[in-house]
Image: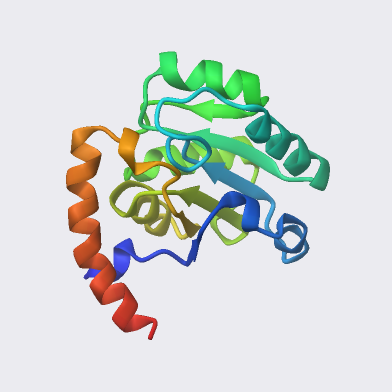
Length: 166
């Protein structure tokens, strides 16, 4: 039952990924959460993020931001980063992930989703068969209260995840 929340892979940072290798393995579509995955919670797109998306486009990836945040948060971020976006996606709903794959022109078998939360990002991606990469949250001190509560539940799930992967 808890397996639905398990990531395909856990990573410390997006900047630790060998994206060229990922592309060579056949991945073509990349989807991203914003807060605590690309930048700290509520932070604007920074030069590092803009550079990352330029690099990914150069490699050949099609990218899309998929966020539960509203348009006022997501649109300026995505426009500065130069990437397509979806907002108010109600992750873990399948709908947003399916729309994101239409935008990227990819299918579950050649798409990877990057996010920092088990109950939205990992579960949603897993529901549609997308490989889910759990990114260590960038800055937990800026997270809203409801996210902090979810982190407590995530710790319980991780006890089972560690057991599965030991």
